[in-house]
Amino acid sequence: MQRRHDRKASKNRDPFTEQEKRSRMNHSKRSVGRHEVRSWTTATKQSLCLMWQKVKVQLMLSMSFLVAVFWYCRRLYSFLAQLLKRWSNYLQRKLIRNLSVLTEVDLLGYSAREWKGETKHAKHMREAYEELFWSCHIKYLRQVRRDNYCVLRAVLFQIFSQGIPFPSWMKERDILKLPEKLLYSQGCNWIQQYSFGPERYTGPNAFGKLRKCMETLKTNWTEISATKDHEERGNMCNTLFSDESKEHKLYEAIKFIMLYEVVEAYEQIKNREEATHNLFSLLLARDSSSDPLSFMMNRLNSIGDSICLDQVELFLLGYLLEVKIRVYRLHRFNTEEFQVNYPEEYRREWNEISLLTEDDRYYHIPLFRT
Image (cartoon, rainbow, N blue to C red; front, side, top):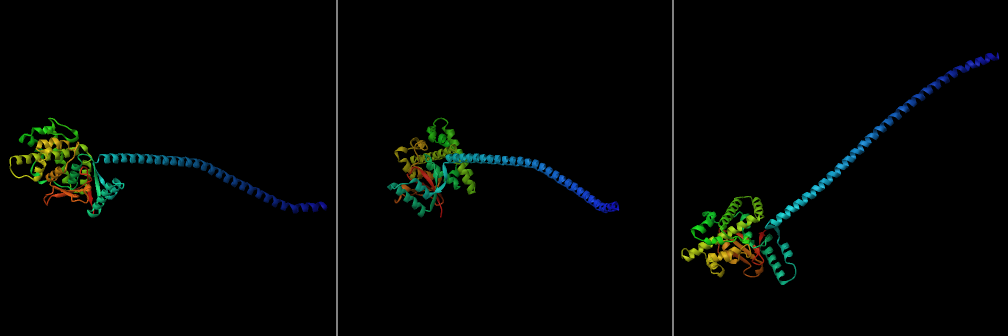
């Protein structure tokens, strides 16, 4: 009976055991599933980590490459900028060095720089500049190269920059034929002794050189005066007056025209033909220029080399070019000779140009502003 009871009890315990077994089996299956999920997750993470490591390396290499390229481009840009700046400065210095008429500067600023100190003369010059600024409305000036062509340069630069045309008498004659006429028609063989300023050339080729000078004057004057745009004309003048060779040809042509006119006036006076302007009588009354040959040898040949135009020759220059040249003579401030016109007698239709001088030797160009 006891055995029966044990078998019953054992039978009663078996279903629970079976359930427990099933539970354990299910639990085991779930554990295996979770392990598989964790393994898959771990594998995925490891794959992603490996992939990220590779991508990270590529990104680092790409970033390093981009940084290197940026640094190189920046250094290249900096190098090119420095190179361009140096080249620009070189060209600017070269242009300024070659340019015989500089760009405008403030008048009073120029006066303060040039006339420092408290000497009587320095104070006198500063007062003269202040008079120009406040009373004459001259606010700026353009400095002209200080050599023995200075006054010719200042006059011609203004004639060209203002677009002033040929004087009336030049329109009626071909100035290219003036050397030929003087040599052959009037028998002035001595023009072969003509000297071209600092070049100091004399000889059988003087006639040919004079003709080239006349061609340069006529060509440039015609071209520039025909240009109506003020800015373009200014650029043409800057280009022309930075070419020393062409510049000198212009000045020698003007000198020769002065000689030609003196020869004609001298012949008229000698033959007592038509009346001449009294400035020719004044010029020929000097010991240094009593006739055209002495005028050439003693005066014109040295202009541009060792001397510049004097006051009488400035009268002649204004008369020939048919311009009224107003000169502000700062060293004559507070006198009647502070402002002088060359020539004193001029026609109403003549154009006016202005010069500024501190010593009657070197001249600058004053600029008016209202």
